[in-house]
Length: 149
Image (tube, rainbow, N blue to C red):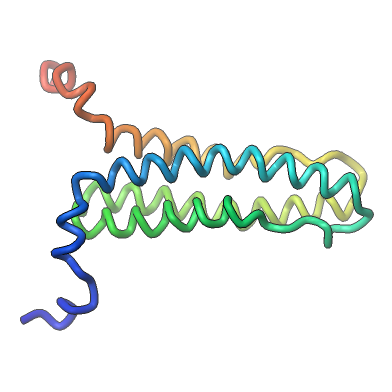
């Protein structure tokens, strides 16, 4: 008997393991879409107010980011190598989202220039999206991959 066997329902995770990469891909795509919508909301909020208090986090974007992180951590349990890479990328998206939101608040406070795009968070999201696509859609390139490798 293992000490942590009742903490994580590994049997339940093994039941959803085949569709878990597709869920991660869905969260990654939804995260990119909500990132675009959140940035447009931040721009309109910054135009409508004189300080940074008007800028708020958007709940759908927060949910997709946390969904990406938690689903990649669940993927880590059933697929250790791919899950580790995906978890690092998802945590990078989470951390970059945090710092990009704070930098948008500084820009809104200064009022000297317009809000910039969240470049670091976009880059992290693109890498996460590419790796999630690779993990979930590998069957598309598998014949070519096996011919080369």
